[in-house]
Length: 103
Image (cartoon, one colour):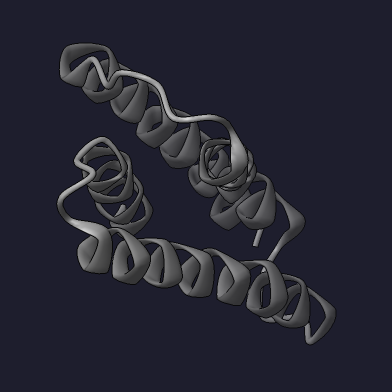
């Protein structure tokens, strides 16, 4: 998921105070991408092009991202972040598969 890459990049840049320009760019990219998802997914559901389960598939990643964007900075444990991103991807896979199975 592109969401994972954008989010982890933001978290890593936020920890380096010397990379202010990269931090701002990563924050804007993360905010834009995830805000687009929040607008586009319901629009696709309303248009009948997407099932509700597909939106539910994105929910854990969206919650994680917006929580992480506005939460205080903390140390990044890359192993833990990687495991959590795998878990989010598995939830996404199961929910997306269920959503397309009903189609």
